[in-house]
Length: 310
Image 1 (cartoon, helix red, strand yellow):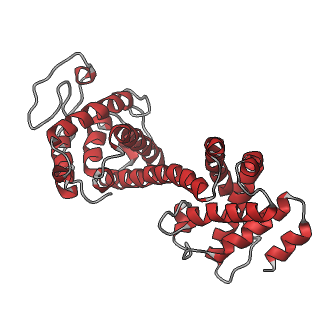
Image 2 (image 1 turned 120 degrees about the vertical axis):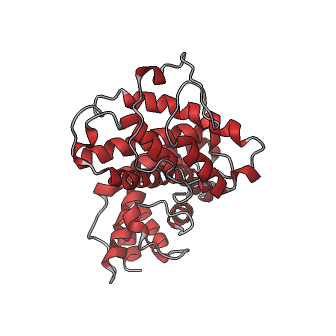
């Protein structure tokens, strides 16, 4: 998802974007497939190079039309960030990274709305085209006063990874509830709460409580158990009512299936740091943690202790 896009104009000076570039009513003659109304040095070339590497022409009858639509989509986000006051102010390296990653998320989100279902979407290396957009959109300001131009490509790549991780999590939570057998009417709220609990688990998980000879795997266990507990606290009623078998055994089986899916190496809906120690599926700890969490939910401390001891 990263390597296909070339950088087109490289690290040359970005063309200064005049106000008329961002006025939708203005028209500018442009060549090479660029859409009317604005033009970004190197963007079209980088996008075409990325499309060629991903084989988009084999899957789309009119690649030029796709390119024009992506130009129009990017235009809206670029105009917004071009006028962002943070771009015109001096910033630390960390602040510049944050703005760029926010920009990447906005642009990728806009593109995905129209093309996420295309078989080529995840094959395209968007980083080169995004680099050209960043130079054009932010190069006129003072934001990069503490950022080397050569660092910007890395910030963009990190932003793309983070965006893909968020998209992956959204899909994985819904698919996990499918795997757990939740009724259709219970999935929407449960999926939203699963995502909220994921956020909270980063800080609120019981870190240091589980045991494993590998401290990194123990950290993964702590996170997963915390995620389970936080989610059930938010969604227990929907979870219980949405299962065909709401007995304790049925709840353990469903919770195990949900988190086996989320922690499967082929899904890896986990923080990036913890993906380095992800365990082969099926992971026995998931069932152990599910037994503990369900027992604790029902106030059965003896069963929870028994589950912890295996």
